[in-house]
Amino acid sequence: MKPKTRLVEVRQNVLKQNDVVARSLRQRFHDAGIFVVSLVSSPGTGKTEFLQQTLSRVRRQFKTAALVGDLATDNDAVRLARAQVPVKQIITGTVCHLEAEMVRSAMEDWLPDDLDVLFIENVGNLVCPSSYDLGEDLRLVLMSVTEGEDKPLKYPTIFNTADVAVITKMDLAAAVEFNAGLAHQNIQSVRPGMTILHVSAKTGAGMDQWMELLQTQLAQRRQDEVEASAAR
Amino acid sequence: MHELSIAMSILELVEEEAQRRGDVRVAAVHLKLGPMSGVVKEALASAFELARESTDFSDCQLVIEPVPIVALCPACGMEQTIESMQNLRCPICETPTPQIITGRELEVAAMEIYE
Image (tube, rainbow over all chains, first blue to last red; front, side, top):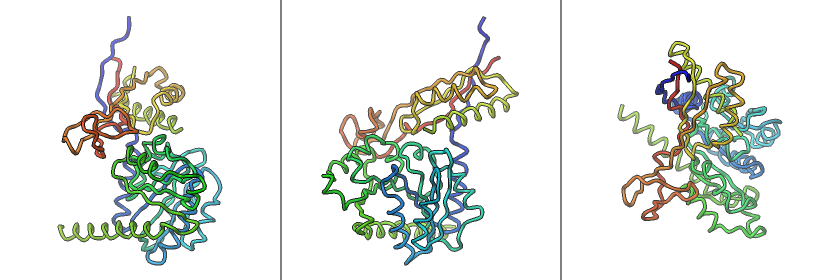
């Protein structure tokens, strides 16, 4: 006879551990007045180049730093350090994405004082990072013109979890006959209303618009803080 | 491929819940899975079979309950089931639907425990 079983309700998020750590990170960043931006993309989209150019610009106005995740090597941290801001590499080993706990432990012995903006570059992967909250305020998903306009349709989840889409390597757009209209249409189908930026980290085109967007977000955050403390 | 680590997290949750209920034996775990969770159903099913081997729950079954994508249509004001996450639009009026209500679930809903 088949043993009798009964059904008991559990209702627990599988990634609750990550979510708990991410929530406490977000609170900690918030209390310290740090705005956190994360970057996700496929390998080879140009995250590191984009971030290096971003850091060189952001540091003129704000105190900034970067955490960068890779399966192996600290090549990216070495590249980013050229922007003359504090950079820390997280080597994930066999793990294909960053988790909140990795960010927390990386910051245990490393968190520069009086930071305004922290950037977190995820491992190059458009699948796994979508499930893990890192405590960030703004998530950028990057795609390059050489990857094809249908990238958002192939990886809808990551686009849907991100706040802003950045189309990189715009200097190559004509050479690869990139169809910007089609790319926008695909992004809007998987994430209606998403803000889209066009940049070339190489020529600097579009970087000003990106800086404006970041400044607007920072100003908004400061205003929210003022209103929140006034309400208290 | 992060399904193996997801499978291990599910088993950790099962262990925790089984202990909390007085070390009960678990016949099956029911998982609510949305298409926008970032987890592939088939990959998770095989990862789970592999992951359970090294635990006390080596005969525990994984029952996946798919959750549809439901979004709020800003034009009709109604909750609508969306067929494809490649096309987040109201099936009635074709208005884009940014506000997702269900479809991201990755949740242990219930367990079947032996009496």
